[in-house]
Image (tube, rainbow, N blue to C red; front, side, top):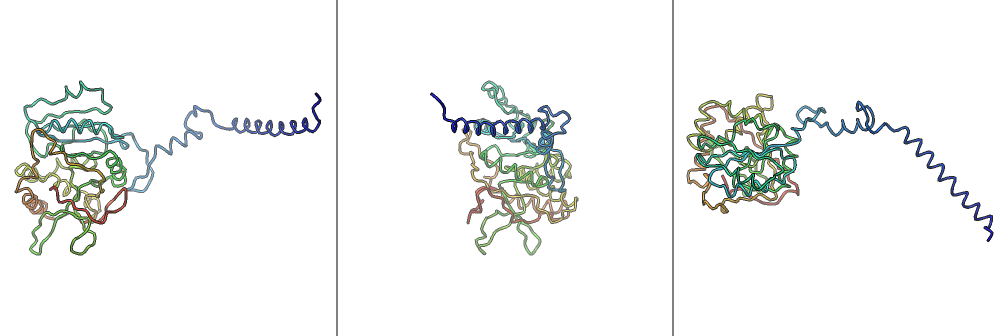
Length: 343
């Protein structure tokens, strides 16, 4: 069968543009840098440098970002809540960017559950138990040598924070690395006589229907820089004695210390903390088989915290805490919420 001339012409007409496109593609490919990109001088090197740099929010310029700045360490101090602790350890294994979990073991003379934990492994995130010689509140604020990340996430042993909340708060902390970034804000209330009392924070002020302010972010669920662990150790002996006598207020001391540190760097009016509104933060205390209740249940708890505010002001000679109304939220601002359930 003979092929009509018009059909052969059409086939020839289609072949030439395809060949031309193939030739152009080959020429452009030859101009690209080799895949190994030796010396990082080509396109791949530029991409690698772009992804390994970040903006320093405090100084406003781009710096190389070592691996430890992209990860964080969890510190949990525990006492008489081993069953809850194992639940928390399992939960936090799924947290991205988590380098290590450090458990400050305050059950003096009791064996840690490390053998049990390891027998149910392997686990993606290593867990280190730090056995203590005395049951002190401030044991958790030690600069443990196992901490090799700039960011520390301190958590109470009865608090479960959702993975999305932790990831979001970590991203916020990287924008405010010199402040305490956490989920539980509180405030100091001053009186005309110069006496301070410890108060809760409400997202809506019931008297004015406007926004409330806070002056502290509690460290029982908060990110902060590891340098502040050593900063706490460097505080006056009278401060450590106050914490030991009351078995309380180490979180208030940390806010004082950070506020004073910020003052020393020229940030006189900079608050010690930044409040991140949690979406899913749970208290597991009722799940403990031991029935142990936290110290914040003691009737003198809030009185002690007011006492600490005034005593610390005497020791330091100044009230360094500054108020803030900044709240960072993943899904907008709720019309009303309160945080009076805990101290």
